[in-house]
Length: 327
Image (cartoon, rainbow, N blue to C red; front, side, top):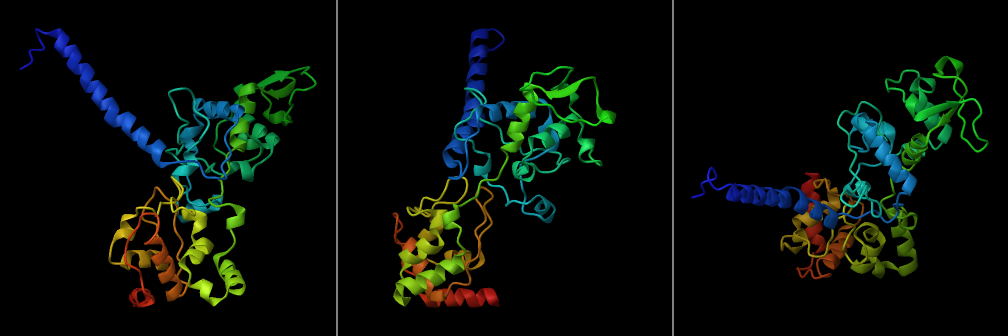
């Protein structure tokens, strides 16, 4: 049909169209979907210009090869603290590396060095980070991390406003006082910015059992069976008042296919046992301590709001599923 050997213009046009199509399906559509489905957590703070510059230094110096910013839900990651990572942890709302590039997700590949997700909380000292960059063995004797002395200058008479770090004589690589370069300061600023944002605000982070008691005392026993009140006290911090959830953190209940099913077994099991089957969202804890009547009221509320039109759930339905789980 196409004789590319004789018609070079068709060959070039075909190559261009194939390249264009692949670019749309491989790069543009996935990038659009990621941007559409994710958003920063409400408590996340945008990075400053210095921290963004430090991100570039972090990548250019190869730090990303050994250090990750991903906490997995496994025992070996618990030593570094923090909750398991979710997509919103890697979504930066107001900072792009340039017009074409969003800030990358630095998940690492080697895990040779410790996880850096919350290093800004563990090590808030500028001096510690600078000394560690100059030679890691000064502060961590067993460290296998390479030194980065080229990020520092040695000056006999540094300016009065210069940052000077104290380096033991045995580790010095030049004469004079050790002064960090602009790149070193930017890198430290970036490292100090690495702090896991809380999933919910402090106001909402009251233990659910305490919220339940407070509601019982103030609103009476009838309010406990009001699905909207129970939802507000137990679910709204994550799924939000409008049922839209938080992109990249908590799934929306509005238009949920699970809630649209007539059979209530799956929603009841999720409330009783928790849910951790979707890696794009945070883990949902179990709420088995709620009574059958309370769970039925909550699920009836969410199954009949925000465009969801499904049958109500009875306490007997919850009781049956609870017995199955126990068996």
